Amino acid sequence: MHIHNRLGMVEGLETMRAQERRLDQVANNLANVDTAGYKRQKMAFWEMLYNVTDDRQRIGKGAHNLIDHQQGNVQQTDKPLDLAINGEGFFRIQTDRGIRYTRAGNFELDPVGQLRMPSGGLVLGQGGPVVLDPAGGEVSIDPQGLIQQDGAPIDQLNIVTVNDLTNLAQEGDNLFRLEDDGAEVAAVDFRVRQGYVEKSNVNSVEEMTAMIDLYRNYQAQQKMIQGIDEMDNLAISRVGKLS
Image (cartoon, rainbow, N blue to C red; front, top):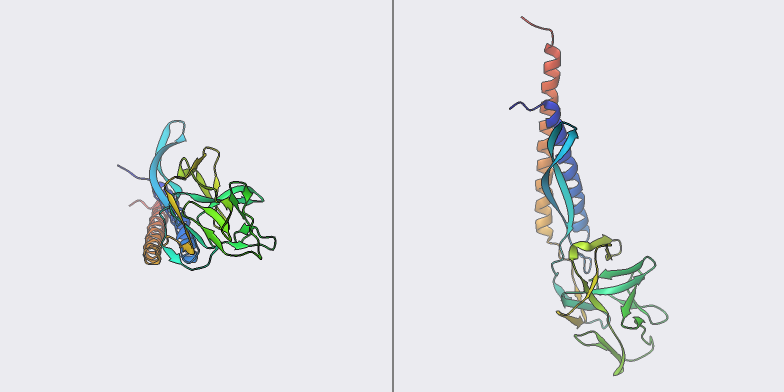
């Protein structure tokens, strides 16, 4: 079977572009290795058949970004406003862009006593944003998310999950956005831990190994393209030189 040199160039370029995207993901994962609640990005590859012209098809490469929602390690901080979710579920967050979701529970109080993320998103309870008395006493939160201050019930955390985790898209500030096909579902199998924070689920050793492999594969594709280019130049230089 004859394979045209131009097709080899196209295949090589497609592979290099996909490797560049994957390398960006790995770099972002490593940059967030210490970010509370961060979920590592990964990529799935597959081959697909598509039409080049009306009478010709070819096989190309498809790539799809994925999010690894595996739970990260839970670290004790002893800070009363640090919260971690063991099991399923997300904290519901009110932002200027609408409702968002996060596993990052390193919360704080704003000047009016609203529980919020460091980036400013407000943590939602059953009755809206959770509001505490900044000058009040001890805050306690039980495993089901019931919030009490000085022994008096204040609110309950609104812990939810979604019907399909693939319908969650990552945004900045460690938040997730629910896509149009997604729907909220009440979280059942969870336990809130006060004084703890869920760490990133990034394994730095695995990501560094992936980065080295990507770099080597990228170099191999470059050499292949250079080889094809040299073959083309050789063929052109010999056109018309018949013995």
